[in-house]
Image 1 (spheres, rainbow, N blue to C red):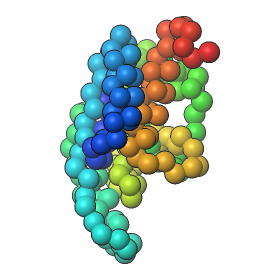
Image 2: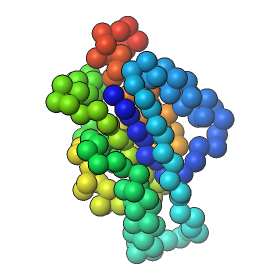
Image 3: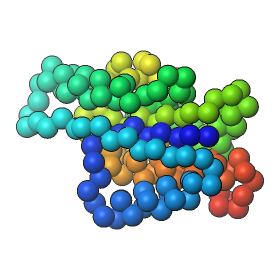
Amino acid sequence: MKVQVVAVGKIREKFLVQGIREYAKRMGRYGRLEISEVKEESYNEPLSEKEIKQICRREGERILAEIKPRSFVFALDRLGEALSSQELADTFQRLAVSGTSQLVFVIGGSLGLDPRVVKQADRVLSFSKFTFPHQLMRLVLLEQIYRAFTIVGGERYHK
């Protein structure tokens, strides 16, 4: 199975880069991982609601351009559905059985996701009601994807 993470912005913190590399390496045995970074809009605060929408729209256009047809798209949004690791693994298994071979996970920028991206997603997930830095979410997401694959494979990691 191919997993693509489409994320706004670049990771600069070494500890996050190292963690992301580690989970990317571990996931290699389950399929191909691709991380697509799209340009983050620069801005000066304070922002009006209109400016926030414009920034999210521009970032959203870049995100949508990275998503390949026939992909199953998960958008990460704080208003999404919360799943357990087991439920995510069950979802992966159902998708694989139904013939889905491309999973895409979308992480927006610091201002959130364009509503068009959320609308086009097949499933909207929330990791918590907490707000996390979008760079940190990339590492947390990769760990959970890896964990779900180990659950599907009946391996020990997830216990």
